Image (tube, rainbow, N blue to C red):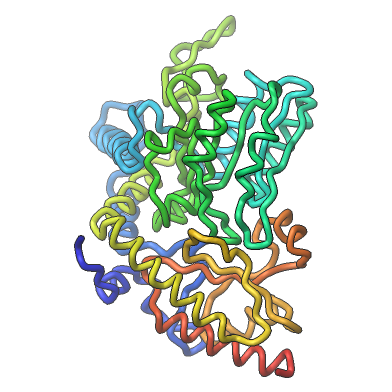
Length: 409
């Protein structure tokens, strides 16, 4: 395995070279949005400055170059997640847009009054609200698989949630709050045994874990570019061809049609059927650059580095008095959410910010988990390939300062 050179990696990220409030930036909010390596910034800048033209339409040089790069990006994504065909890769605006696409189109075709949608208690709002909207439209019912006190999904209870009315199961690969890695391959096997298709939210999983969709055997897989060191406004929906062929378009407009008349419109084949309007071709090219950067480092080396950080963070955070972590089940990625006795999360974050440490606080787009653990909010420190043990030490020292200032300990 190629050695992981953290110094070189950190130098690849321009944002990490700056100071905040006179302190070196320690960026621990990558689960919300990761920073971009210089190669991604340059790829985006080149497209904006030199190769900007609409795709799939004109035959002039710029349009051809943009179209080629857009479709090359689709192939890069296909290889990265090991999809069988490029037709199974749909570019979207992000994870949220991809889930909304499936919830609407799948719901239109397959969901009727009294049918059931199965979710888990660990889902992000983007994998809850679109399904609630579907249930409201169709008169369907949501069923929710719980997590235990360690954040482990109670997969042994899954069979009791499946009936002949179950239409789809939606599950996160890695919780954005708990950092716990769900056994999605086993979950999918159980669901398929009951003839239930599965959508996997890979927004965090694609960053920290394997995302081989054929090995996983998921029916749908979604993720965002901006959490994967790429641009905002670009994401991916993978869907098995047999499912995507059956789904009606989510939106109508240019580029998703074969022909249009006032009597009838026929739709383009996959994947263009789901890509109405001018695509984010610059974002797709930037996402491909991010994937190429990750593959240059190698997934195995990144994973080993992040697991070392995860183990180190577990030990160091346990030394902070009055701190309780959520999501202690294993396997676990480098996402840490916690509360501090006598300290409001926003107050803690404000003090950490003055020390140059960026963390996330609040309900983390996961109200259901806040309700599960009876909290108004948490503090989250989410680590990435560019973080170090020294930054974890700085976080712990900062939390100890917070504790002295605010809790009286």
